[in-house]
Image (cartoon, rainbow over all chains, first blue to last red; front, side, top):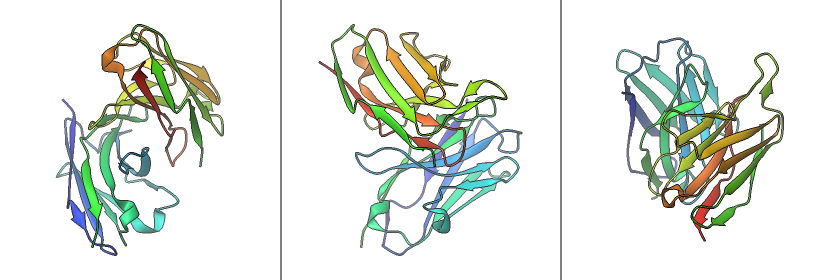
Length: 120
Length: 113
């Protein structure tokens, strides 16, 4: 059974750096074709893709957020970490991580998400 | 970026009736090399994470009821719920994964009329 779980702070202050961890089980991020993506959703709004890291450490970012994002993986811990610098209230959202399936090339399994509020 | 649009924004449908959602991409998401459309549909119920329904534009994910079907190619796609059930009330998103950044449509809210 494949599962993913997001963890991180619920509240961050403006200008701070957010660090989110996706801990997964049931698959290996070292397996060819596998990836883990981060997607966010502000309250009442649509989904926004943020970043994706592939099994071979190739990394892709949203162009509009590229300067603020870093995605890394730790295969030994089954974790993917997303950092976002210079947080702003508009970054308030639920942040999801999801597996990129090696068979269908998009996200097939998602975590439950973690809510992040940016407030002073 | 490939821009995804959806219509309608909101779709009231009577139980047992058909629901049809349209999705359009600003560029083709069809790969000629494998003849696949890199287009997925997700269902999101309140307080839940999105659930994959359809990939390759028309392939149902395992476990998804056959009342859900996807069609279309290139830039124009449709998700159809053949006979709406109460548990289908949700927001439906299309998403292209032909190139990064992956992009989602704004969503269509399906509700009971």
